[in-house]
Length: 393
Image (cartoon, rainbow, N blue to C red; front, side):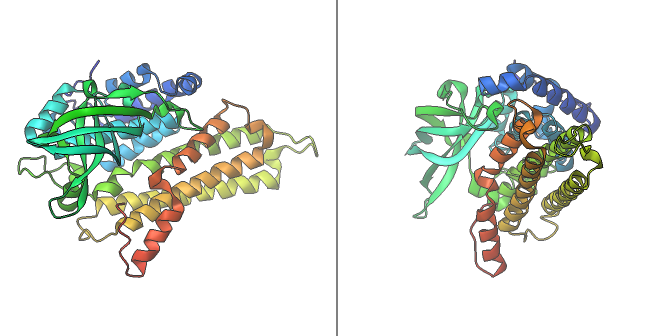
């Protein structure tokens, strides 16, 4: 069942948040099965479509509501409170609607009118041969999140830029042009279904190719006929493309703190018979992790504000600053999870329990290429001293 891209004025923030709650609760109820299947169920994905989540960032001129970044943040955080794998797809499915939004109008309509979900993989590990009118594309790509339920995928390849160098492009492929290999068997985020795809000598015309460098430079489609109010046209491409990762981390940490509080309120240590909620030990931990979460929330608000005010501020915020803010949030929330695990002790280790599952997912989120803290602070430090870090966000 394809998502139906018709105008839905009822997709208010309130309606989307209620839908996010329903998606989150369903995903949490199926978490054990999703772990075994290495994918959320089609039922979860269909509910995402039904409540309008997958349409959130379709431009208005293509029948979507193109909600604000703030609303997107609230919806994503709500789902992350219940299940991080489902939140991962709650982020990526609507976000990927920005890819066709940069294509020529006819190509936009082809993809949006089809109504299928969109996946992508920016890693330029494929091959593309220039031919008349487009490229012939081949390759294998891993980590293609949500591909099990997607009809379209953009795949990264490097091609000549016409100036003696190389640039990354993303040819957009339909589901009959690639093969899925289910090789997603990981420590965490198992429900994201981030499998491998194989493409063998597929022709992709020029008008079905997303050009990241062009989108990064002009922040608009090349055509003059576009949705002027679309929020993702007014922000730096990659910092906006990655904003959901710290949102999910904050949502997961918030839930872990709730679980820690519940476990601690009824816990009595055998060694001294003291109820932990009455002990300065756990009171101190609760205060510190709550304060750390507030710090992460403040950094997240700063990140979103910088995106919203990017053009107003002269488009001068460096990509490395976004990178450093994002990874600091994720590092902080990962440390919150570790503190909770080490304070609760062995009782938190049982497989399938909320602490164990959320901890694995949040650590796995922190391993994403765009979440690596050491990389980000090295880049930000370069820019602060006047060197060009050349990071993309």
